[in-house]
Amino acid sequence: MADKTLDNLFHDTLRDIYYAERKILKSLPKMARAAQAPELRAAFEKHKEQTEGQIERLQQVFEIIGKAPRGKTCDAIEGILAEGDEIIEEYKDSPALDAGLLAAAQAVEHYEITRYGTLKRWAQAMGLQDAVKLLDETLQEESQTDEDLTTIADAAVNAEALSSAA
Image (cartoon, rainbow, N blue to C red):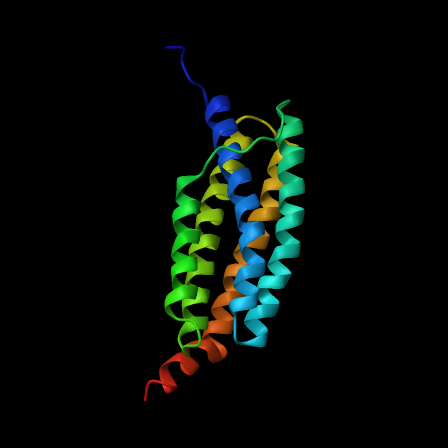
């Protein structure tokens, strides 16, 4: 077996997050439709637009390393998105639906943050400064989305889910 290098690992992880972003892009409209709170729906719609830009940046990173943009099945995102689908099914028309959607969305964000953070560090180690900039831009967006979701949860969604149970 040939020795695997950081270059190989970088490429494999890039393929993983590329697949994940494309799956996320498909799931965001469903999450937006399921959301009851207008601010949560708007957050999902905004993140859909951001995700389109993130996919374009990933394609640029593939170009930088001289590889075709191809995804590789990401079992982690498949599982996280499946949990989101379960929440939609099990909590439909429930006051806790938005709290569950928020939790599912933040699980996605946290996964993305770990991937982009790692890819950025590896790109730095490999001297791929243009890739570092692209990956950092996406990392900042993902972190901001996570903060925005927390704000929405704290401002109303969690209290709504709780108060209707009383």
